Picture 1 (tube, rainbow, N blue to C red):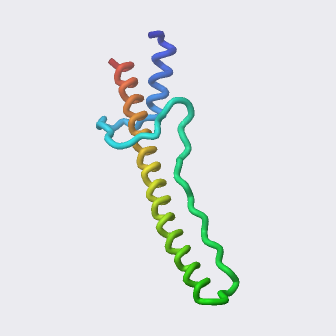
Picture 2 (picture 1 turned 90 degrees about the vertical axis):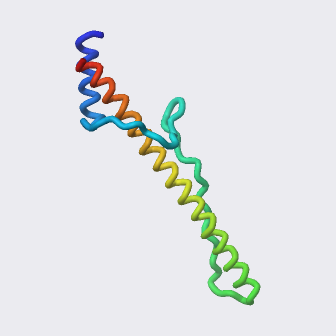
Picture 3 (picture 1 turned 45 degrees about the vertical axis):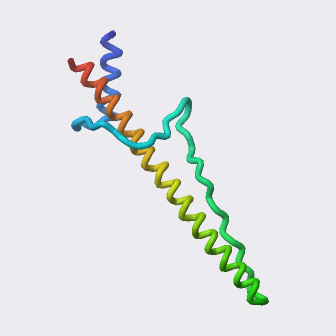
Length: 107
């Protein structure tokens, strides 16, 4: 390995990885081939609320749509939370690999 390559690895490792003890990262990942993937969570659409309700059936229907929306919103937020957790795991994995490169360069 050339001196320039070693310096680049050390510099990259110092920028990317904090000097902490290494730990094995468990959990999901979003890493794939190519660019980092966008989340695939489906955001629900809010139900349309009429200016006023003309009968009980219309009110009941709207309330059912709101309950359905709330359930779908919980699923969406849970999906986003999983995506964020996986992203944090990926960052830790990258930092570990950078730290390994730094340790290799120092040895």
